[in-house]
Amino acid sequence: MSPHEPHPAYDAVIVGGGHNGLVAAGYLARAGRSVLVLERLDHTGGAAVSTRPFAGVDARLSRYSYLVSLLPEKIVQDLGLRFRVQGRTISSYTPVERDGRPTGLLVGGGEERTRDAFARLTGGEREYAAWRRFYGMTGEVARRIFPTLTEPLPSRDELRRRIDDDEAWRVLFEEPIGVAVEERFADDLVRGVVLTDALIGTFADAHDPSLKQNRCFLYHVIGGGTGAWDVPVGGMGALTDALAAAARDAGAVIATGHEAVRIATDGRTAEVTYRTGDGEGVASARHVLVNASPQALAELTGDTPPGPAEGAQLKVNMLLTRLPRLRDSAVDPREAFAGTFHIAEGYRQLAAAHAQAAAGELPTAPPSEIYCHSLTDPSILGADLVERGYQTLTLFGLHTPARLFERDNDAVREELLKATLAQFDAHLAEPLADCLALDADGRPCIEARTPLDLERDLGLPGGNIFHRDLSWPYADESTGRWGVETPHANVLLCGAGAVRGGGVSGVPGHNAAMAVLEAGQG
Image (cartoon, rainbow, N blue to C red; front, side):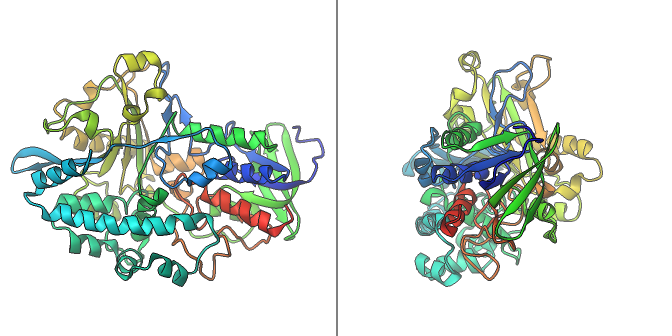
């Protein structure tokens, strides 16, 4: 497609070939609409990609996004995707030292094992009973909320009636989540494990009055109507590859290396100016769907941009020759790393790390969580690596806002990585460095990404993985019918910054496509 040739009018131009844009393209193309996807990079997928980051090593890792919970099976079925996820039998393991000895909490592997693990850690039945009650409540909320994500936005009152549980509504929607955690749980480690779901990619204290931690918690416990977080078989790139194939098979045109630079619209028709290595071109459309951040949308349309966003995470990818042995010898590393391995995520530790970062300092004990994709899905590794026992580790660090890296991103990244791995090493019976594989150049197979790296590489505003603070999944005066509407009638936001966006869900892409099809004009 030459930028210098005249282009026909499309029914829809989609700016950005991330997973949400590809979902929208698939739905619209299958409905018979003509669709053009403009992607700035030389590949589709956005943050949901798989790459081989280590020279000469046949390991295809989920480089940025890495687990799936919020993707509705409806989207997989509607688009006929050749994609599946694999559940994890272990939910989490959290090591800790108590009374001078290493121990921990293993959640999963059956009710009896989990009950015994709670008793081993806490010395009684109380915490496990509280855990069962609390997650029984969130499970019922999940079953009621999740189906609404691909429907027009309910009002706040409608959603409350649907949940039909005043206590759950108060806990999740009205009071800081820290209140519920402290009321229900007594053990510091158990409290911390519960709280972590409120802090993934969200820089907040347990008692933040904005309740952004509550919104984060909600999206982390409603996925699939169960709250389970599953492993994408073949890596995250398998999803976006399947989405791109489905869109192309339905007739969508996907143009990589095409960067949208301007959107002009009168509310009925629009023109999208794009840039390639050969110059500029223009594509006209009845509708434009923007699979990018609200900031990028404002730049394209010339509107007033929203306030700045800020990410607060460290993402680390590793390849190991073997899983490290644990100081807590009662737990098999193959189980401990199969779920989410929490590090320095006790309740008081999380509060201290947030306070330090809020004061402009790196946390002295950076909290993080790790899991091993290859234990559940070895297909991401070459057959030779599998035979030799190699494993991947994915680490996601909390409470490291972008502002901490502004003085020297490279230096602070290294400092934070060193401190984070030191916290990890404290629970290992051997140094992690002894287990790291080497690439073809003899370098350790480990890479780290800060919020500023994500902003540079992926265009995430401030490195925020959700593009902005997550929203409540109900309508208000600013949302519109589907949560994708903008000030321009025929320009829709289908990225993570849409209402009910965030995570690898495809929900904003689905909802933007539904809004276009409802309009009846293509």
